[in-house]
Image (cartoon, rainbow, N blue to C red; front, side):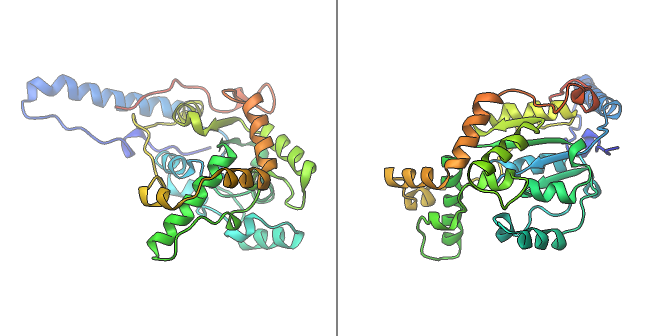
Length: 294
């Protein structure tokens, strides 16, 4: 059973201001709200596991931060990703190297850059977990990753320029596949099947609403304003990045499978819960009302 931290662990306490009588009612109301949240969480504890499939450059850093505010550190898998080169392996040897490098996942919460082929092997509870992800338009995702690379070069005082060649093609499909040795349409169909297994898909262009819906389903607390971490929206970076028609066309060619997967998701899954069977939602967490914390 998941151990969820009380709301008091991540909500700023408000002390009564000068003038005890004047502020007593307001202070008591805040205390009662916190006690109510704690009570609701205590009766709505998750009975399974939570898996957040974090595709790079989809707002996952913020989501991982929000999850950490609700669970003790001991409940969360301590690794945030497998080594970058292992994300894009295409051989049995590469998969085996990843399996040997990282311990089994016996934690209640997983959130990081872990491909599905890795999770299915290392997380024995994967099939019984509440699994969600964030999808972003593949072209925008690649441009965002390119900006991130430019930012790193600027920080290190290196020559800063766009370089799409260092960004793996069809990266979303590489994260969603059950077997990294697949390619072409076989890879795409495998990814679609794994996408259909998701309990919820957040779309980047409706990010805050999607985050609130997932946390409501899980019975977790959220701050009133969702923060924004790991942004690459820097003027100096945009000044360097080249976004010509030729660049966009090249991105489309290199990521045609990602684009097809995103179009499939956008058509079939936008705004929908995706239980793998009719009883899943009852088995898992959507048991308490969503609370906007003060």
